[in-house]
Image (cartoon, rainbow, N blue to C red; front, side, top):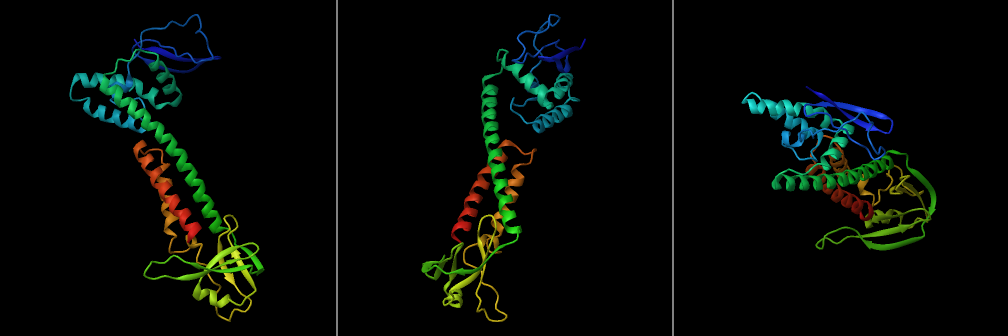
Length: 291
């Protein structure tokens, strides 16, 4: 005979599900004692052990384990009975509210798991905890990618008649065998670098027209009033993150972040993608600041 299992709150039953073991009631902290009619009976099955998954398993892993158990049900009566018992617990383990109540009940019971299974479950719970932190990291990376995309897509901010306050010689990224010099310019609102061959065009200019991105203030274009007809505005040495040479870096960061936020991936993969995304973030910031 199947009995109902009720989950009680301060205002009454919130969720119910069935088990063959008898009625079991989960008491949330807000309710000191169950109603007078409620009687607690022996514990139900450990559905995690029946499915062969750790207690920190994801819903996708639980469903996959149940499918594998269902495929084995035709082999023997024992496997069929195990599959039927696991079928009763599947709605509980796949419903977030019921699973929280069931896990709370399990924590109150004597731990009868073998040492190897207990160690595996503890390791899995620790891994799931790291995966939660990794998800927060990936959300932060997603915000950064969105900021970078908006900075690239929004109209550039134009500064006309920017007075050149400073010119100084700097070394621009080159190898030891091919040293190159450039010039760093500073105006009231912007600062940028140009290769020496570009700096020759504006070496005598006292005023410039500068376009920069609205959010991160990355200089994209420089023009001079004396520019010859047909000559295009100059692109600075820095700001390469928005150019084709380094444009693949934020794209790769976006793909890594999007894959890490998929709900169906394993905790291990989520952690690995968060680490890879963090490394790509450092690379993106390096290109943004120094190139």
